[in-house]
Image (cartoon, rainbow, N blue to C red):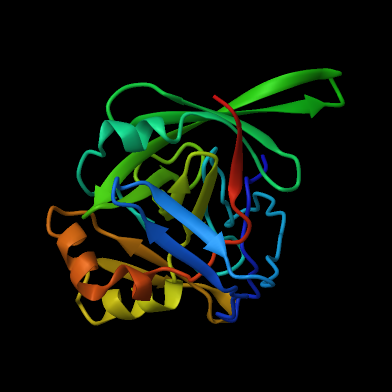
Length: 232
């Protein structure tokens, strides 16, 4: 299983940033532009035991490093146009192609084909996704691990425009501190080498708490290269 795109991560909290400028038009469409000559760093993320970023428009988990998950999706139902903006065929800069279709409500399914050398044939994988809104901001939820129904990873779809999507992953250290101080419900599980997993408890009050805390504080500044639409 492979990811769509990723961001640089050295497990020490250092993330490469660029000078991207994000804005929203009066119609509510998300747009982005890059101030030249800011270079964008591309990294291919492979699904590891604890790291995953997958999607069609963004599938994200952070393996090997520290993680943030929640027991179930939270937020409000997204507007129809936001859901429809994610449907289609998408490609990463590295050439991976993903297909995204809406099923019902705020649910989406991302699919990807892969070649099996042993059987000498292509196989397809499906990844259920749930789109929710935190205020007027779209957040995408996905199963953190196959087979688990009560652990979801999530990513803020910070910038959406017809053929480009850029996401921002949770900044684990900030979520850890907020949970440890009691500002958000949940717990922090420690692992070897000072790594940890933040396990959030979903609630009706959580979206408001995140808005008050500040999404810019809670999410990384950049998730790497955007995903580009190559077909409807």
